[in-house]
Image (cartoon, rainbow, N blue to C red; front, top):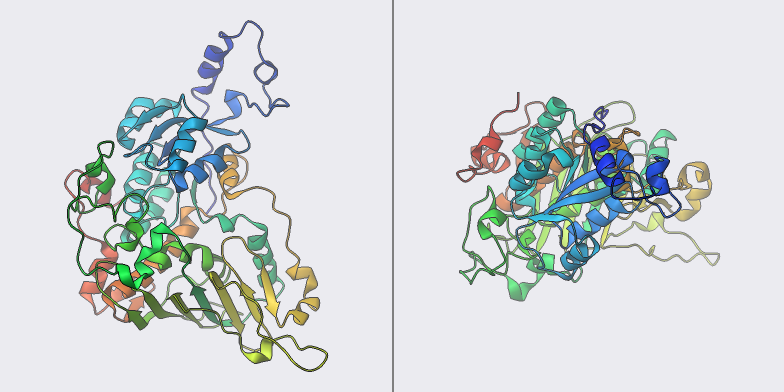
Length: 480
C-alpha cells in the first residue's frame, strides 16, 4: 500500500516564528531553514511526536525515531512513569516534554502540536491507541505485534484505508539489508518453489518470558497486590478485563498471559516469519494444526509449543507451503546431513546456527535450504558452498536507513514505509491464528477468503476477542 499522507505543515510556521523571537541572532538552522553541522533541524522539517509508552521498549522506539534529529517528542503519555531504568533514561533525555497519563488527554491537549504517535505499550492497548491517533489524522508507529486480536488487526487495516495516514509496525528487520537481500533471493529464483518452512525459538533469560520456567508455572490468575502509588491500573488495563493488580503483570511480565499478551509466537514470530510471509506471499493459512502444547492451560502460554500451518498454492513458483513452528527449551534447528558442508577428508559437521530465533526454508527440488535468523539478519544457503553459485543474490545490500527513520521520512513525504498496516496487519493475523491454537490446544480449518474459522464458533470467538470494557467499546465498531 502506498502511504500518501505526509504531515501537514499547518502549525510549523507559527512554531518557527515563536522560536525565532526568542533569539537576538537566529541560529543557522533557523535562518537558513536546513540542518546545521550540529544536526539541529528547523521546525518546518521536523516531525513532532506524541509518544505513548516511554519505558523499556518505548525508550528504544523513541531513541530510534529521534536518532537523526528529524523527529522530536513534544508529549509523553504513560500510565506509570519511572518504572524502569529505560523509562528514567527517556525522561532524562527529554526533561521538558509534557507528560500525561491518558493518551486521549494528551491528544486532546496537544493534538495541534503532534504530527505522529508512537505506541510502545502492552499488546492489549495497541489497538485503541493507534485507532484514536488515526481518527485524529496522526501518523502512527506501533510496536509489534500490531494488535492483541485478529479482529483488531482487521479494523486497523480498514482504518489505514479510511484515514490515509502513514503507518508502520515495529518489526524493525523489515527495513534492513537482510530484507533487501531476501527480496533479491526471491527475484533471482533462489527462493523459488519453497514448500516447507521450519521456524524455531529457544528461550533466553528475560523477565518477559518467565512462563517457560517450570518452577514458575501457574494454573490460575494471581491474587491481588497493592497497586504502586504512581501506577494508573485502570488505564493500564484499558479495554481488557481488569484483574486485580499483581506484579506478575507489570512491569514487563504481562506477555505471559493470554489476557494481555501474545506470547512468543505473537512477539518473535513478527521477527522470524516476516520475510517469508511478505516476500513469499504466504497470506493466511487454510489449516492450523496443533502438534504439542506442554503444560497447557488458558492462563499463560505453554512451556513448549509446536504447531503447523498449511498455505495453499499462490501462483507460479509459489507452491503449497507447510510451516512448522516450535518454541521452548530444547527446541533447535536440525539440518539434514545432505546440507552440511563437506571437508577435504570427507567428513562434515552440523552447521553452527543461531537457535534463539531462526528459520529453515526448503526448496521443492532439495538442492539446498535457505537459513536465516531473526530481525534483520541476512540469509545464507546450506550447504554454504552453494552460495558461490548465487553470489550476486546472496550479497547483502547496504542499509540506507533504520526502520524508525523509514517511518519518519515517510511522514515527511519522502518515500513509503516498509511495514505499513496493509502488510504487517496480515502478518499479525497469521500470528493470532497460532495464538488461538496455543490457547485452545486444538487444530482448526480457516477460510482465507472470509477470514473465519470453519465449524468452530468457540475458536472464532477467540479471533474476535472478548467484549471491551465499558468506555472502550466505541473503538470496536465497524470502520466505514
